[in-house]
Image (cartoon, rainbow, N blue to C red; front, side, top):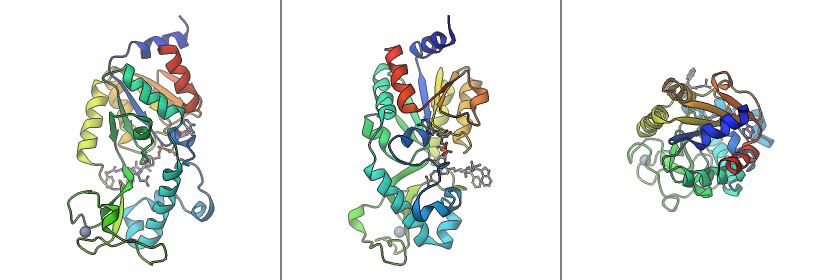
Length: 251
Ligand code: BV8
Ligand code: ZN
């Protein structure tokens, strides 16, 4: 049996597949990955320097504006064939979960329902002081903000700054998301690792958890990543191309 046939058989026979997605799955929807240089004003900044509590403390307006720019990209983005295929796969596998590092909502828009969000949701806004409790979204209707003002919008409850509901570097991930992700990674029999450079932890630990528990690891990425050497197979290509062809072969 060829390697391809073996891979197809492994995925076809999976009972509890898990898909770990990174920024690469949203690239074909027009959302730059963290590795991509961003354009215009933002090209001069390193995302890893902006997505931190320190950056927000030092320059709240700059960080808020950066997220407003990215929210604009996300609002105009549509799910691509990769997101849509994963939503179709969820119907074939009743125990399938997606664990995503992405902060866009393209998996939900494509119709996926079993999603574990590790790094939050850029569309949501929370109080920087957590005055309503940890990461409780504040409704857009409850605050006003105009792009010219020199600060982020103010919390309607405590007057502190508002911030995007994303997990910054050096912030802990939401405990429930972490627990759920490690649970499904421990129990899965196949993990598809799609569109991630595998650099950011603890997300990048999850394939090791799956491997340690006997799962087959299959990567879908046009490039090699920090995880490629642990993979049983690396399907080289864009997720919007590879995933639909994979679905064609397993269904
Ligand atoms: C934590 C939300 C405990 C925000 C994100 C030293 C000092 C301090 C901390 C650390 C340190 N060393 C390590 C750490 C831990 C740190 C970390 O991992 N740092 C990295 C940089 C080494 N992690 C954390 O801080 C986490 N918290 O550990 O808490 C703690 C507490 C205090 C102090 C220390 C630790 C929090 C991590 C979450 C950060 N937030 N996002 C926002 O979006 O603004 S991470 C963000 O970057 C994304 O969510 C994603 O996770 C990551 C980007 O990675 P990818 O998704 O993989 O995207 P990337 O661009 O890298 O790669 C894209 C891939 O797609 C490429 O491989 C490319 O080839 C491929 N591709 C391209 N096109 C396609 C494609 N694939 C398929 N199809 C295509 N068409
Ligand atoms: Zn508040």
